[in-house]
Length: 434
Image (tube, rainbow, N blue to C red; front, side, top):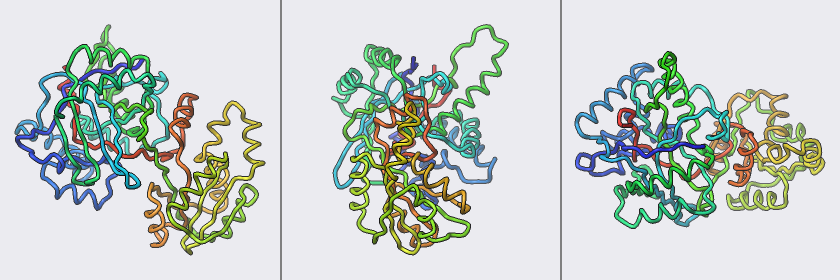
């Protein structure tokens, strides 16, 4: 049973901040150093001052806390007068077409993954979580959203959301950091609608699409908070028990999962021909000149439609190679691991088992990078930042849901959900829970 609640959201005050587009930002973990500098220039009240504060290690978290207090005291940020769910809509452009995804925002009661209510889909690193825990301890506020997926095949929640957008949105703004993105927000304040949504969500499972670090940080913070109440006979729910969450129905046609391409930097790069020799027992290969982005995507997609596992390699000498796992290896996986084959046969796992592990056993990989952009991968290779780039198919939402339902966790950076919800549209201040 997933427990969710409406909240009194913390918002930018439109009377103080007239241009909301200049104060929102992407999630902290996808902000490049260049964009970080630009966000600071956009507006003195940009959310970047709270999510990625400047200063030395410990100093910057204290600064963020003081900045938040100052903004609230001076009316830059204000708390909603009523507890609501908020209908969320994000429009974006992909491959020349305008698309949109919609959902709603509320609070989710934090649960350990072992309860199988809130489910991660990929592994995370611990370094970022330590940083986020320090920030959360100082600010006691969720500035960004945990992006989750739920299944609404019967469209019961969709109908309620639709009924609540037949009025002017409380927020309608472009993003200054990316003018192709547009965000809208409506309030659901009717108690009947709130209760129906809350009851319907009790029977759902949530898959974390984006925001594993934020969720796990809040879980750690909540657990630390629980230690203070060990002596109490009855524990009462506290603001720390909840996290600000975006709920997206996975059945939407414009819902996108992009691939997270790999970039490898070796301690001593042996050359593409040597790498191919190492994995030649596992893959059939075809060396060719690098062609257009559309060609790469289409060739990979057609291979997947045939049930094959294929990858493109591109290296610093501008060589390109198309790899396809030999059928004998596919058959071995399906035959020996029947109960696990759906997970093991995912493209990302094939890449790790038959390519990454074999290569790493012979040549030390100094650094791994990730990008969802073919152009960025090629540029990084051409500028000698990395030695080779690997292009692969993304998982489908069906593969993702099936994997999570079976209890598996994919490797780190297996997916790139697009577009990302912004930070700063609505926030959750723990003190405003009641």
